[in-house]
Length: 279
Image 1: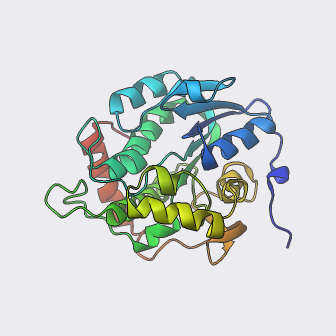
Image 2: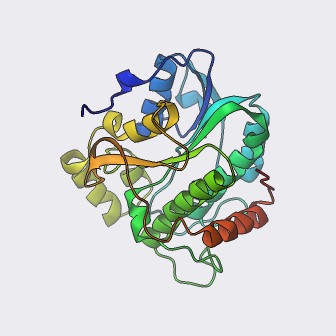
C-alpha cells in the first residue's frame, strides 16, 4: 500500500484550523499544508511577529490567562491541532505554578480545548500530538507538578506525553471527535531548544543522523486531522518501529486507555486549570 502523503489531503476550502506551535518544525509544516489545501489557519504562537503574513495570534500555553484570551478570539473551528510542546528543560514553573512540561504540553492544551469546545463546528476534530516516549511515562496524579518528588526532565516529559494520550482517549470516550498522533523521531528544535547542556548537545548530534524530515514527521497529525479514513479514538504514528515512515494506526501503551485513569486525569485537569470541560 502506498504511503499516505500530504498530497492526499482533501480540499479544505471553507474550513478553519487552529494549530498551536507553528513558528517552526512540525507545527509550521502542519499549518502550511492545511493552508495549502484551502483551510484558513489560525496560528497559536508565543510571538506572532515570527510568522508574518498569516493569521497569527498570541498563545502562551504556560499562562492560562493568555490561553483564555486566545480562545476568546476564535469564532469557530473545524480542526484543532494541539501541537506545541516543550521537552526536557530544567525544572521551571508556568505562570500558574505548574511544572513546565505538564503545564504546557497537557494542562495548557486541556484548557484551550475546553474553552474552544463550545465554538466547534459540526464534525470538528481535535488532534493531540503525543510522542513515542509516552510509552516510558506514568501519571502521578497525586503530584503531577513535581512538588514532592525529585524532578527528572525525561520523566516529566514522558508524563506529559502520556497525559496527552490519556486525555485524547478520554475525550473520544466522552463523545468528542478526538484523535492522537506522534511524529516518531523527527528533526525539530524540540530536542535542542528546551534541553540544556549535554541533552541539547546530544540532540544536535542525533537529529541530522537519525531524525526524519519535519515534512514526514508531520504526516501522522495531518492524516489524523484531514483523512476520511482517520476515525475518532485512533492513534496515528510512523510505520517503521514507530520512529520513521508514513502514517499508520498504532497502539498506545497499555494502561493509557483505562477509563478510570481518564476520568481522574480529567477531574485533576479541571481542578488545576479552573476550566470546566463539559462534553
